[in-house]
Length: 111
Ligand SMILES: [Zn+2]
Image (cartoon, rainbow, N blue to C red):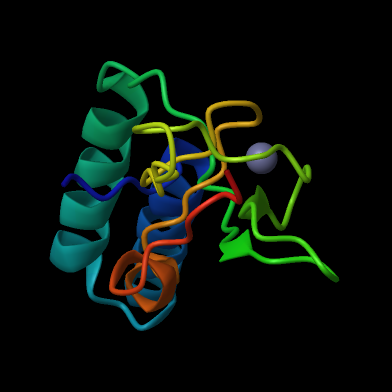
């Protein structure tokens, strides 16, 4: 899976490095950092959204796993087993980090 950084953060860090090296009299390095900042400013942007973390949880007296973020009930995989997907089908939150706890012991719905 790809990791993303913000263009503004990369551009700002490179500009800061250019200023720092310029102030120290290292004009060759300052020029290289300034050129790199220009390259970053012109790179095409990816269409990404921040990852919203959540997990599948069981609320009081309930056997149906819900998204901790929006409380949407997990989809049924079969008549009795819930699909503990990596993402909430309702809000899109990422369940990946917390998923294995419930996945090893699937929750069955009362007949
Ligand atoms: Zn959700």
